[in-house]
Image (cartoon, rainbow, N blue to C red; front, side, top):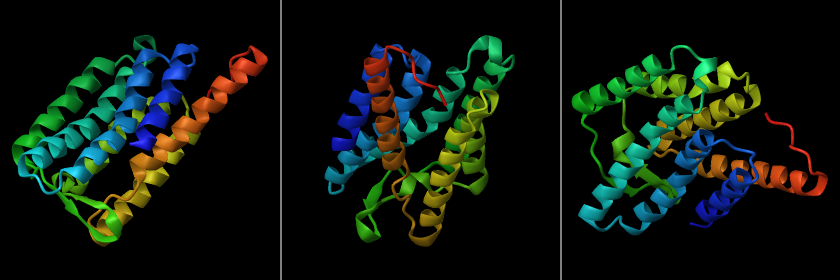
Length: 197
């Protein structure tokens, strides 16, 4: 919960200062919100209905991340934005129809949560990451793409080892918070917009 509140405050300040567009703010919030979902998953492990509801919310939040990344691309910068959006949504619908995830979360090793609803074919995870990456490739945001790739790779390794996804969303939320607090501070001290990366 602390990470969620800290990171949300940071990006809202950045948005208020004009350092973020609304579509990119929504994309960042789709990552940060996983901290809130995880909080509710921890406290609802013993409750069948609540656990199912928050597990489904977690799936929806993660599935929405590439959608918001695509929406944060300006129409003028990517001619196939609508087609990619439609293809991604169709892919999520097909995935739900064919895989039918089990919307339950249980305790795993080392205190991490086992998201049964994210036991998906590797190709689904590759498509998720590819759709997520389009924005960063178009805008040549290589540092952000590398950070996402490293955290996703580490989390996937954790999943292979013990069935948990590690702390990918926590790391991303904290790094985002510190980056945007730094940018807000820089703008407040200098009166200039910071370098975007």
